[in-house]
Image (cartoon, rainbow, N blue to C red; front, top):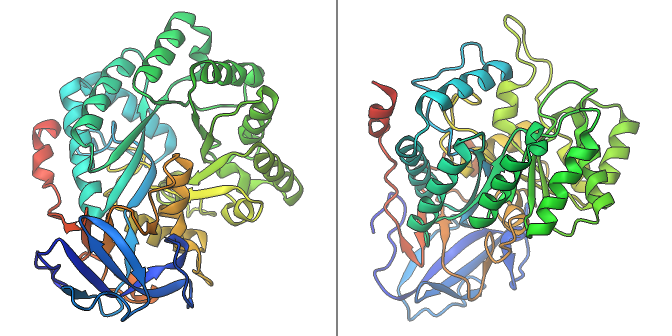
Amino acid sequence: MPHAFLTLPAAPRYVLANATLPAVCVKGFHAPAKEGLIRADLVISGGRIEAIAAPGEAHRDLPVADLRDGMVWPAFTDMHTHIDKGHIWERSRNPDGTFTSALETVGMDRMRHWNADDVRARMDFSLRSAYAHGTGLLRTHLDSIVPQHLISFEVFGEMRDAWKGRIDLQAVALFNMDHVYDEAYFAELVATVKRFGGLMGGVPQMWPDLAQRLDIVFRAAADNGLDIDFHVDETKEREVLALEAVAEAKLRNGFEGTVTVGHCCSLARQDEAVAARVIEKVAKAGLNVVSLPMCNMYLQDREEGRTPRWRGVTLFHELAAAGVATAVASDNTRDPFYAYGDLDPVEVFREAVRILHLDHPLDDAARVVTATPAAILDQPEKGVIRTGAPADLVLFSARRWSEFLSRPQADRIVMRNGMGIDRSLPDYRDLDPLSGA
């Protein structure tokens, strides 16, 4: 399949020669690293990685694709998205870019438009984009307000089946935690999540009975073998710190499942003593933290006529230093919560490096969209390059970090089972019937 910088051999067994790999993504092969990058040859056979060898040591009697030191990454993991609400911007724009307006605008759009056909079309468009960019594992949150939880989970089930073998999909029920006291609704929600192999979610807030509400969710998850993924503290308000309560709830309930928390913005607004205390509890509880740098920078500290004073992201470095599993992800795409984006992990990574200062050094940075989120999503075999794994890879002409981070890498090659895929992105005109354009 011809590409701008490389042609893959039309053979069942061949060598990707002179590749540059992020060492943090490579398992079972060691070589001297420079800025966390190592050089190797990859033998591809029958759609899998047969061997990883030092440059020049692979089988030279095989057809060779010479990367000339271009990078090779594993397929990406995008662990926090909202493909149920993606691509509604043209029909439901955020009037002022604020969080409050986003909530209101999405709510109105949901009531007017979110039938199964609408959700299905937008989900499919989102997944076509993610696939073309190189994503192999994706978790989406689904707005689960009555009756949307039944509609969206059914469509999600269809999408998961339709995309099997291309993108592995997970879904989280995002619901108003006031409704934990509505026994009929909550029981139906839990049963729906269980039926589709999903996760419990929600948005903990600083209610007087926050601990009680959290305990209800934790008990329901434990009783049904479900993991949890919360939206937490997506605000600049220092007094909002539900993150600590989530950590305490996991410990208090002896919950053995996985608990992930997204955003955690207000943690960065705390004084050092409070931040240290909360981070210690998060680490003790074994929570996973995903930062959404593009969306948080867009929404947080936005006021008309005023320049934002902070970046909106959590204490990423401090959490990682404490041993907390940390990752970044796309979050919203072309909807009132984020007007832009294309579910492209390269864009997410590039912007995360800049916003979160993941550089200097960049040695381990590649893990935040590959190995770490894949492990958090309980698929540790993904997000890594190892012998025996499917050759689900993303190839770049960029050789070094400066090259990789300075351009959008539009000429990348996405490989699945050792073959290049058609990287054509869906045309926005496909969405015109949904937007009234």
